[in-house]
Image 1: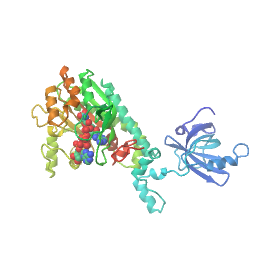
Image 2 (image 1 turned 90 degrees about the horizontal axis):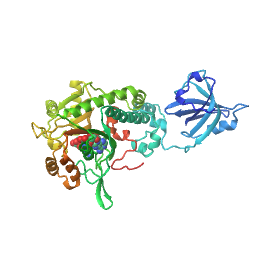
Image 3 (image 1 turned 30 degrees about the horizontal axis):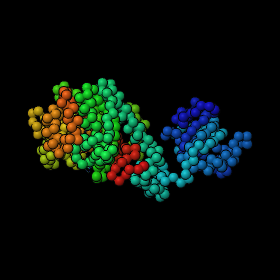
Image 4 (image 1 turned 90 degrees about the vertical axis):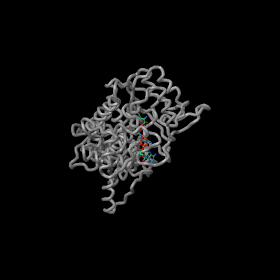
Length: 466
Ligand code: ATP
Ligand code: AMO
């Protein structure tokens, strides 16, 4: 046999035909000395393989070899596809392979640090198993992350990162079709791009430098460089000093910046269409992955409207006030208030995805444009999924003198961003943009409770490995 067949493709149309597959030995079950059942997994699909001693082809030594394989070893199987007499339990494919040859390509250690069957169970299944007196280990988050390579093999995790890939893909496809140019900005920069203390400082050949807290400065400078509309998918570094379920020290930023003609609403129009397109594409193209996530971590599909709801910050705090939650008119919403507002919006408007705009200027970064009609407010917005922030965005100050003044007022070291401020001295079109946290989008779309679940190898204040 020269061709390789995918496990996924094994069905009764291949009955009595020779095939060759490669996959992992998911389970190994010897039956006496003459027979062993192997379940081989490839890309989430599984097939039962029967190794049975036969005088002319399969030796009892080969049966012994099969029985001694360790779980998760990589194996090559050659054999004949057959239709079993009874339905097969414990494999996705409803045909069996009568094994003729079996090779172990890469052997896994006999005792794995995580039992993958346990790691793939939902809370409900775990409770049931415990009540039934089954021996089972609840695999905690830290153990999963310590042995992430194994943990990633569970169906839910396979789903999560395929969904993440689709979000990035849909983001890129949509923006390219809307005439945006993909850019790559430096991650080693001279100073903080967002202000605040959450910045990793380092030595750059004798000069103080930082890991970029965002592509903010350079994406705006690219607008001054006449690219009109730009986007970037890249790493963002934040030296967060506390633990939450939604903050990482490194995450993937999906950033957009664009010229605007008249109004920051033009930026929100892009957010609106872009995210409806992303959600639609997940629902259409990731059905199997969403199902795999839902089987382990049950969640309701995200409720979103064709035209995304927009509320002003004032309308938002008024809604909160009506239920007894008082917010400072020019203060920020804390996590709890954001959640509460998410609930109220869902009850009133039937959506779990909405834009809150016209924030008080005082709670926004220095580069944010104040509202023309009332400078205590700003041309800015945040976007929420299920009551949690996934996006911040705004129109930017493009007048250099005013930008300098705003930076000083916000305690930014102006000399570290002088090239950025100077770039507005050579003629700068009005512009705005936004930044999205990829891990948050996936976490909240799937109703997951921790951002570490949607980061491939998460970095938080206590973790820089694996
Ligand atoms: P961003 O930093 O991008 O604005 P965010 O979700 O961290 O995103 P913030 O406006 O910084 O939003 O914070 C909103 C609320 O989240 C804060 O009022 C605070 O309650 C909480 N919060 C933010 N950062 C942290 C942190 N590092 N640790 C604990 N709580 C935090
Ligand atoms: P902001 O700081 O709000 O805005 O970040 C944008 C988005 O990034 C995500 N995010 C995070 N995700 C994981 N861990 C973190 N520690 C973390 N911090 C932020 C959130 C957030 O909405 N330059 C602006 C964007 C802009 O105006 O264009 C910025 O960085 O989803």
